[in-house]
Length: 254
Image 1 (tube, rainbow, N blue to C red):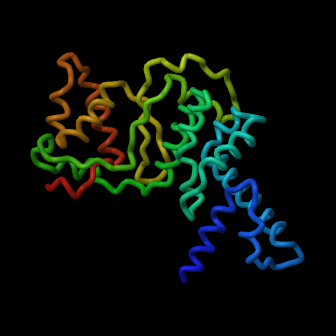
Image 2 (cartoon, helix red, strand yellow):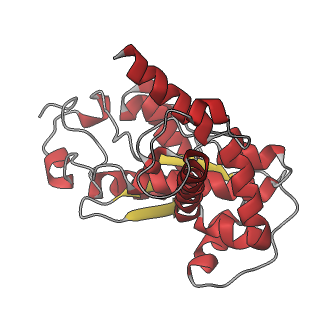
Image 3 (cartoon, rainbow, N blue to C red):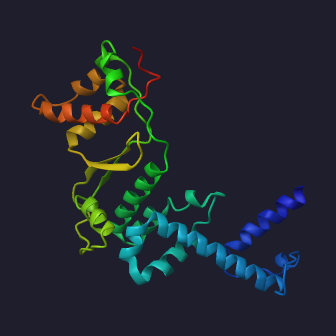
C-alpha cells in the first residue's frame, strides 16, 4: 500500500513539472501505442487544460478583460499553484493574490468579486427563519442571532459591480486606474428559491451586519450606530435579511 501511495505522490509531482523525469515514468504502462513519456505528456496537457477551463469558468469577466494574455497568465498560475483538491470546483482561490502581485490591481479586485460570487452560488440555499416566524419571536432585538454563513460582504472598487454587470451583457468599458479609491461594500446572498443577489450597501448597512456578527444581538448592533443614522436604512436592511431568511433558526427561540 505504501508503494502505491508513493507512486501516486510521484505521479502528482510529475503532473506539475515542465521537465518530466524519465526515470519516474518508467513504471507506467500506457494503454495504446504511445511510449510512457508521450502518454504522460498527453495526460499532463489535458489536466492543465482542465485546470485552465476551471479558472475561465470561475473568472469569466477577468478572462475576457485579459484577452490574449489569459492563456499564458493562467498557465503560469497553474504551474505555481498546483491543485490541492480532487474537485476542480475548489481550484483557483489564490488567483486574486496572484494577479495583485502581477500588478493587475483592478482585475485582482474583480477576481475577488467573482470568487465571492462563485462561493455564494455554490453554497446551500438559506433555510433561516421567515419574516412571519421572526415576527412571533418575543424580545427579538435582545436575542442572540446567528446569521447565514454564506451571505458575505465584499469590499471593492466603486465601479467593480458596474464592470461585472456590463460584462454579463458582453459590454466592456475601460478599466479604472484609481485602484486606491475607498472601497464600497457589496452584499452577496442567496434567496431561498435560489439565485445569487448582489446588493450595493451603504456603509451603515455593512456596519449593522458586521455588528451583529460581532455582538450577537440586534440591539447591540444598532447601539453602535451614529445618532444621526437614517432609520430607513436600518429598516430596509433588516427587512432584506428577514425576507431572504438569512437569520438561522437554531439560535433564536420563539
